[in-house]
Amino acid sequence: MNAPWLEHYDPGVPKSIGTYPNKTLVDYVAEASPDKTAVVFKGRKITFGEIDRASDALAHSLKAIGVKEGDRVALMLPNSPHFVIAEMAVWKLGAMIAPQSLLYTDRELQDSLNASAPETAVVLTPFYDKLKNIQAQTSIRRVIATNIKEYLPGVLRVLFTLVKEKKEGHRITLREGDSWMQSLIEEGRSGGLQPAGGRKSAATPDMPAVVLMSGGTTGTPKGVVSEHRSLIQAGTQLTAWLKEALQGPDASIMLPLPLFHTYGCSGVQSLALMNAIPLILVPSPRDLDDVVKTIQRDKPALFCGVPTLFNALLNHREVIAGKVDFRSIRACFSGAAALLAETKKRFEELTGGRIVEGYSLSEATMACFVNPYRGANKIGSVGMPVSDVFARIVDGDDATKELATGEVGEVLIHAPQLMRGYWNNPAETANMLRTAPDGKQWLYTGDLGYLDEDGYLFLVDRKKDLIKTSGYQVWPREIEEVIAAHPAVAEVGVAGLPDARKGEAITAWIVPRPGETIDTDELRAFCKEKLAPYKVPSNFEMRTELPKTMVGKVLRRVLVAEAKAKAGA
Image 1 (cartoon, rainbow, N blue to C red):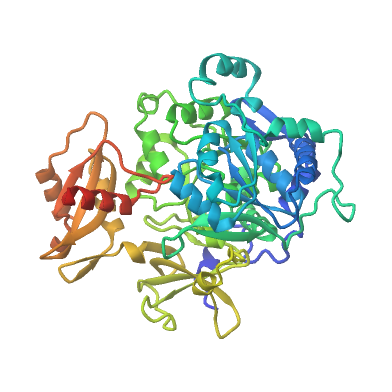
Image 2 (cartoon, helix red, strand yellow; image 1 turned 135 degrees about the horizontal axis):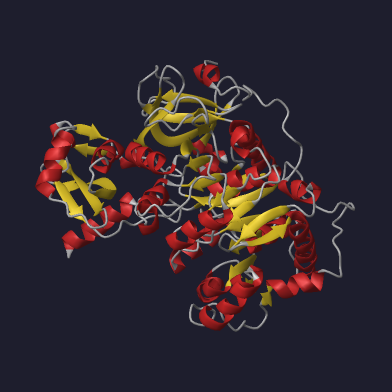
């Protein structure tokens, strides 16, 4: 199989890992030095021993109330020690976690829960009523609530209880039959944990570990099932790739992105736990003041973000004023959405920290393509396949036709850590995972891109986001790259709207930088200098913000839906 990227790996990165560790993340937590810091949360350090003991106790109590091997347990939790302890407890019983987005509406939450059918849910108190509102329409029978203050440092916990707990909806009254997570931990401490067979953990590498929600190529909610083995394979690949950035006693990883997403859950968390490196957790990337404060206080070596977060940091008042010290950061990892060249350039110039961009999907268990840490980072590329990952580009209309270097087509991935499949959805699984004549299984991503002569992948866009205007095919990202380079633009989203004459009219939604006013005629002239006439947007709309997912992807479909609703009003 042709693999030109192998010649461009950084020194020391293996072309193949060989044999992967036959372990689970539960094993790594249990084997780590018990006094070593596992998680840092709001300045409080929680050790591997604390995580292991608390999850032992919780697992004992969960088993007592009926959680068993093969069950799914929904986690409605932010980035916090609660998440790590709950998932370890679930895994120790041989069950799966089904993390849920905290931004879901009632309908979205109901659809997501029905896609994986969990019977137990662990929920942070502000989201308790949302879950209870729809519980009757789901498979949830057991609800366990937990309060964010349980793992806050002492002084902050007192202040939170006095000032924020009631005001921000954290203080609740449990309904009959529901439980407190902390009470279950305390009750389980005296019981110990001995699953069947005498092993401390029932989890084995080939068992399913996590069900993460994905729209796949169709946009409908589906549960992506990944095995424990896949988490270890992803963590091993990332360890080999980023080894230099994670060396030394001061190494740490900051994660402001949600653990309910494959980026955080499968990739960053595996990387941290497998290497016994402190994982600095930030509950919400939208709280920029907290992100900045955490960087200043905890001094991460590796900062994990998404393009909109890097962009937001660039426009933060303290960053603009030069008051934020980024010197601890050796590398920044960017994923989950396309990184615009202008954002990368500005952030690296401001901070001195190199942004290493990667690409994967929930279905491929993070991360399949990464730019080299030391080698060339080609502008616009999401990197090259990591060890043991292979890529092909095929014709979007004829998947049997493999395309040549530089030709745009659908991206296919072959990797050891591909998903087991979609939960109880064999038809969609067969559509995404297909076996080639050579016996290898390939993931059909639905993303369009091309490989250059060195094996770097350049994404063009999603197949479903393609704009067809005046007989031409136009990729939104190309236009977004151009508009983002305008000095007054902070954020941009581009999509096509129905148009009687053109078929689709290209529309750009723009957020100006603080204090800037954008003249649309001047911006149109700016685009005409860099784009063919048919690619220049017909419409520009200025906004104060753009709709985004929890991990920072601009929701083009929401922009289109809002515009259609407005036009029909």
